[in-house]
Image 1 (cartoon, rainbow, N blue to C red):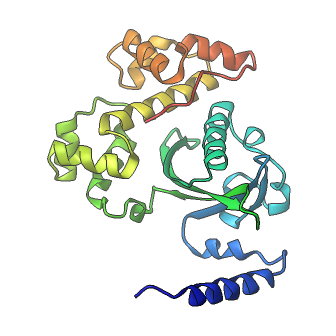
Image 2 (image 1 turned 90 degrees about the vertical axis):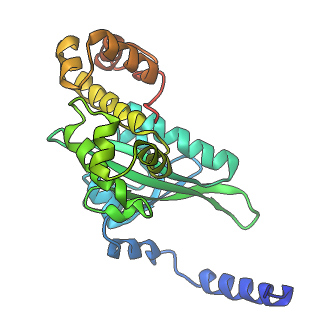
Length: 266
């Protein structure tokens, strides 16, 4: 049964009255600290961080929220990541529409990948204008409920995380997940908006970027380490994802330029 207009107005007034009484120093978002693995953040119209929960600023190496306030992604992340985050932020703020289920891959100091599922929603003022955004991020590793409704592919995801530098076939992944190749593909698209092949390639390209930024390893050796058939195949896939060759990417990083034409996409 639909609520009457008077009921809707009364509900809206009650909510507005309550929220209007909350003191600015009340960290409502601290609630997220009691949800395992959840990080929360908010940005203003200039893409500056204006608040973050404990999980978020600790993950970035800060001990106090105040030290993070006012910073943007370009002061916190490598340019290729900051540019990808900025594109998502601009889309949310320009369209006024949420952007949900964004899959982002990072590597820890041991070179092991982890992926985060990020959601971003616009924040509006009393006139309905978008004045910023709020977002949440959750690591997949150790939190398999991130894949709600797709838990069957967790075994395949874990295998990819541990073996993405090796040759991986779709029948192999399907057997690990106890799914047919067709159902495996469908579940990956549902969970990550990418095919299994696309997901593996995104992971390898991200690993290649990390290696190119960190040193001067020979491209042929790097291609072999990341599971590409040869250097030519590696260069073709890298250029397709990043818009430049691996060598050009390394030169841009070493010269302090913003590397690549775009961040890897699934």
